[in-house]
Amino acid sequence: MALKYYQLDAAQVLAQLHTQKTGLSQTEAATRLQATGPNKLSDHKQTSLLTKFILQFKDLMIIILMIAAFVALLAGEGSDAIIIFLVIILNAVFGVFQEAKAENAIAALQKMTTPRSRVLRDQTVQVIDSEDLVPGDVVLLEAGDIIPADVYFLEANALKVEEAALTGESVPVEKQASPLPAKDIPLAEQTNLGFMNTNVTYGTAQAVVVETGMATQVGQIAKMLTEVDQTVTPLQKNISHLSKVLSVLILVIAAFIFAFGTLTGRESPLDMLLTAISLAVAAIPEGLPAIVTITLALGTQKMAKKHALIRKLPAVETLGATQIIASDKTGTLTQNKMTVEQFYTDGQLKPAAQLKFQADSKLALAMLLANDSQQTPTGLVGDPTETALIQHFLGQTGFDWDKVCAAYPRTASLPFDSDRKLMSVQTGELLLTKGAPDELLRRANFIEEAGQVTPLTKAKRQELAKVNKQLADQALRVLGFAYKKLAPADQLNLEAEQDLIFVGLIGMIDPERPEVKAAVAEAKQAGIRPLMITGDHMDTARAIAIR
Image (cartoon, rainbow, N blue to C red; front, side, top):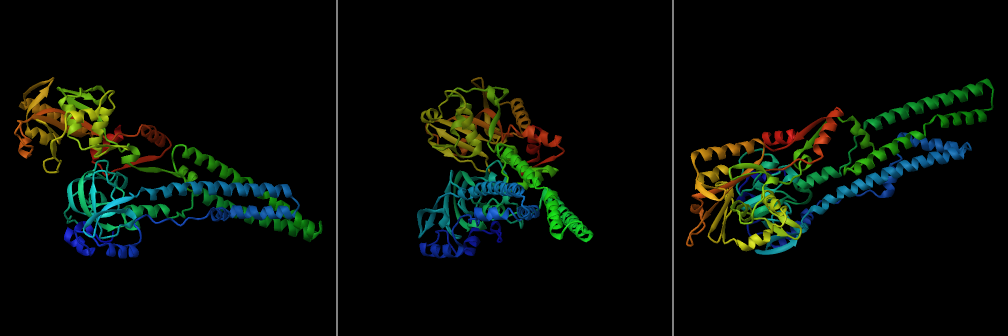
């Protein structure tokens, strides 16, 4: 976006877009749609299969082979001509097949756009096709929604957006509805903006559309993907050089043979011409393009089985010249899925796999119920941290999340916010709280261990602080859990988050992919230097690198 909307406040953004908080009228929206076009990634101009096939013959070596085939045919060498033509056609077919396959995969990016959006039109909430959104439209968002365009948040209520696909941040970003004064802010830190095709994992928002279609951040990525890279690979350079050298040598030698034989009178000019042509045909390495094409095609197919997409056959050879591999961390080196790694409860720190819960455990209830994840037909929806807590229990045989939720219905809640760093829910006379361990311990005066509640002593606080640091030093994201029994007349409010009973800590991380360690070792053995690129904290990156 040329205009840095993140520097403006809501009134300035609305004025810049000539709209208002109640949205556009249908008439104005239709006019803008005519001017800006639909809110979708523009279709890349597809080259027909015939054109792709013809373009395969522009290589100099292929041109020389075609000339040689025609000459061989004229000279009566029909079998040689047929073999050369088959080699040329085989080369073209392999090239067309691979390029078409890659373009189909790239085109899949266009299917990511959410199909419908809730928008304010004529001061009423309407559900429209996302393609019909225009700059100035006001959209309504909630947990589970995909942001349909680049937007500026007019209101943000405990809003978190998962932007890993765009920025590489594995943890959802807390969003706000206020201007950012800095002049130049990285994309990942533009917290008052939302970007097309990122996911709302928590909270609700009202936002105004600032960019649509190819003008969005994901649109710029799509544009880069569809641009044809004209870079010549080392193999192409070498073959081109070899073709030129061979062409010159063959022509010089053929001309010399023709001139020498004609001038010395040993043969007639016609016989010497046929001799020179035969020599030229024999000197051309017609098997070279076939060998190169088949070798590259086999390499491409082998990589395709490992889910690596190759658009052009010569790109396979270019990988052989690789000296440095720079890889994004989130979703590439890691699984982009938060996972529970360790627990601290009952005075013991244990791996997650070793700890089993009873359904009425206060720690289990806090993890399950102080949680806004939702079960949908397609799976869990919500903040990745919260869904990871549910997934841990779903992995335990016989554990029924729905049954626990039915037995302990939520009667009130205090959403997480960045100031207190806590979330609390009330179920009957039970208050359950989760959040940052340091904030939680400030409000806790008791601790439950082995079913017994005792005062939280200074020594025990120091022990908990030590465990918290130990987990954090392993680059784990640490959450604390506590509970409290309320009196029948008590109401859930901020004052209720005092005198809590501490029950445990958990450490979570976005784990590395199982195949990464072997891949990095293999790259190093091949003399390639692997680099990890991430926006995460240095300690987190170091922990992933060490693992």
